[in-house]
Amino acid sequence: MGAALIELKEAIAAWRGRPVLGPLDLRLEAGDFLGVVGPNGAGKTSLLRLLAGRLPLHGGQRVVSPPPAGQALTGAEERAWTRRAVGWLFQRQEDPGQVPFTVRDVVGFARVGAAASGDGEAVSEAMALLGILPLADRLYRELSGGEQQKVHLARLCARHPELYLLDEPTAGLDLDWQERLTQLVETLYRHSGRTVVMVTHDVDRLPACCRRVLLLKHGRCVALGAPADVLTADTLSGLYDCPMVVVGRGGRFHAFSETDGMRMQPARLQGAKGGAL
Image (tube, rainbow, N blue to C red; front, top):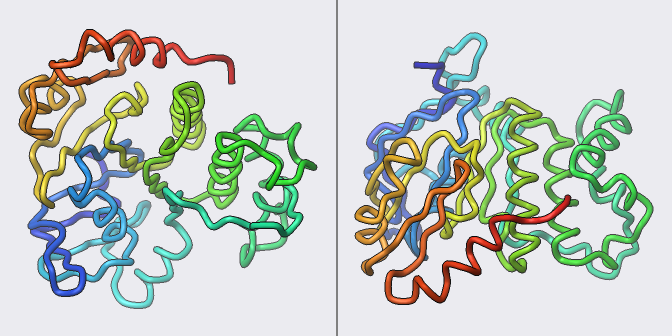
């Protein structure tokens, strides 16, 4: 068992006095890739907020003990580590609007407050990794939705966080761009070697590098374990309250309702092939 980066112990979170998550036990290890799957209102985003220290505990514990020391941080030290080491890709990004920012400008926002040395290099490396270096001088507002999401992923990468929190990074994109972003998340994980928690309501979007999957329903853990053990027809049928069919392919899993499986399967599997980045 590796070092625990963040550990939740009987953690309970509430929003405006209403419990939204827990009690939940979760050990997030350094270098882990955890997929979080569940229907709307399951508590997925609340879990990200709890991991990021943005949602106060209503009960239980949140223990932060980053390596190499592995000692639990408290108070100001914990808050400072969280601000520095946790990077969040929101489902709905802040839109620069009509301000004529270039792609390089938007990615460079990640370095605000960081040490000045190496800023330009960090931004260029992030854009190269995500394949948007040729777009560096384009205006952000002129990009497609998929291209804009790649820019935000590059901005996150340029921060060099220790923990990536990805809140439905493919939401609102067409099938082609969903697959492109899924592959880019895998590229980012394998290149950085950091810890990733990715929230999605669609198991198709979990990349093959996903090590564990947490299924949430009504704020409670339904299952937690290796994808092959968790993403089964029986488990997902209980999660979504309808008969499900699951197809495994190349380390990825594709799920659809049994009632319209024959209609949806070709589209889902076609989408899984993706295209060139």
